Length: 355
Image (cartoon, rainbow, N blue to C red; front, side, top):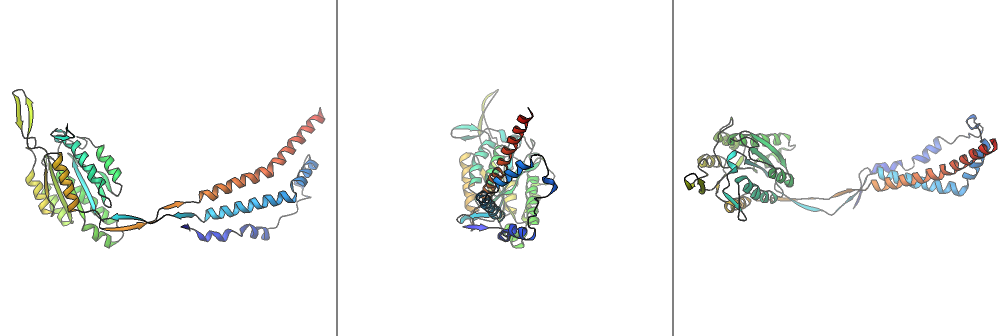
């Protein structure tokens, strides 16, 4: 469907006629400005250039160009077919641990041994892409917590920034409490920027934080359980994921030894965080379990709640504007070219006569 944003601009159509009526052309035949050398030559050019057919042609082109300019000023747009978008209204924050222990290689992807962060990226990327209709934000934390991506519908950007993260980027230690506190702060700020109270209420009922870590809180100003209490007060549900294998073989000076690479994982605190916020705690010992957890999260927090429709809009103003420019160029060439040719001829004749 064709639509004009500024339909009122059509009142400009009779403007040239109005200007011609209010300010008629003056007879400048005897003006001193025409008393220049080669006046007879210019007079002959004017007599030849002002033929009726030429005037009519230029008038048609000028009228068409003006019509196209007014059409461009009306900002024509093409409205495409309605497209349905699923919108859940959910604000989903993801907090990913980048502490030094995430470099432990106790996960496998397609038979290849990888560290915990690589496994997290592999699984979380699929999860992010499946969250159509959610606003997703990304927090990276180590010794400090950083907001990498604010709440956005742009899942590709969130994925890109997650995949670009690196171990130690936020420090070697783990500040779980500060990560939760930052998520709360960003959600409160989002509420303050919201325009409608109803929208705020809906968001408060659908706030989710997925926190993934492989250790215990060893840094930060806010304790995890205190942060969980603040999260509960602000209707933020937290799903915690403890990542890391229970057993792996390490080659030492005394030979191969079985060790528990997840000995530092504070499961008690992670369970406490989940319980205080009506969330759940999950344990991911390998890539398969991690995938199951994210699949379960999709079931616990379904994406589509309602649908909205929008029509894609394509601007068309540049087409009439470009054609008007071409017509104006043609008019300029038609008007100026004969004058230039005759002027050059006159200069050539004068030069020859002087010789």
